[in-house]
Length: 131
Image (tube, rainbow, N blue to C red):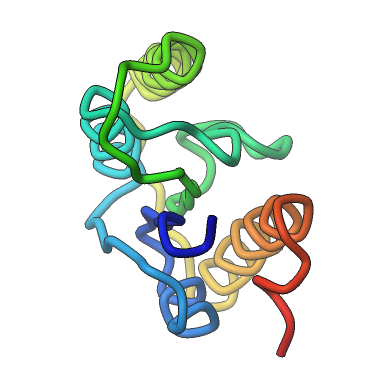
């Protein structure tokens, strides 16, 4: 499974700490969701939930999602989940907010997203997160 695992993320901590795993970097939370959806349309399946944790879309600027990046038939469950996540993101970010986070707060958000992804990867295969 690890040969097909792909992490789609805009989190620099994930990029550095999981550098040995296949990754696709994105510029924003929203772009992560759209890239995951594009991959699902090509046959990928979700391995971690795109809205994991209790941090609401629009609150954290970071999101990381693990997928099984295979080409095959469309997995309708994965498509339903990512479409729902995109809808939720759009609803939660509809009202424009000018949020400013200092470096410490951004670091905290990176750590939260990292921990959520790490927990999901451990559930898939504990060897993925061994140091």
